[in-house]
Image (cartoon, rainbow, N blue to C red; front, side, top):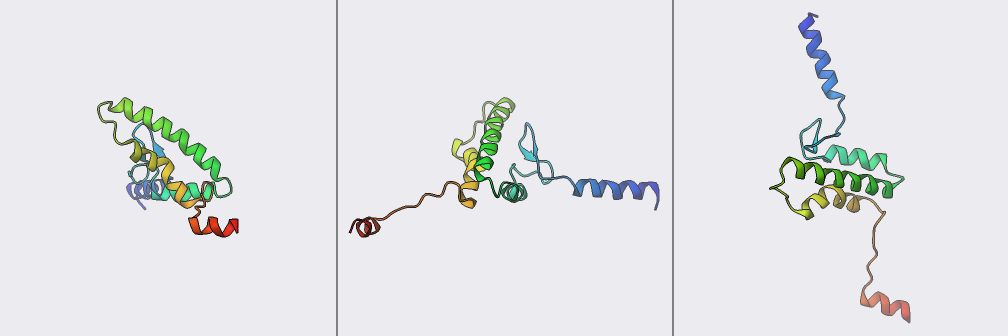
Amino acid sequence: MTGQQRRLAVNRLASAEVEHLSMRPLWLCRRCGQPWPCGAAKLALLAEYREEPVSLFLYLAGCLHDAIDDLHQLNPSVTGSAADIFDRFLGWPARYTHAYRVRTTTAGSIEEASS
């Protein structure tokens, strides 16, 4: 293996080992370039915080706060939708964790419970 081939092989290994972490202040994934948290980052976060879903929400709330500050400093004229950035950081885990599931009741189930 030549020196150039060795460097290419090392670069390929190094890039494959990069985790799907945020690249601040752009809030893009360091590995795939998608808006962070990307799909792979979401899966990793769900696995990491499987037993502590409230901690996941607290971590992501801190990231949301930092992202709002960072993105506003980069381009204050483009604020974007508050709903979109909220969903990007805090909306998706609510769909996949049981931390904040709310049971809804219908009029029929209320009548059954009271009789």
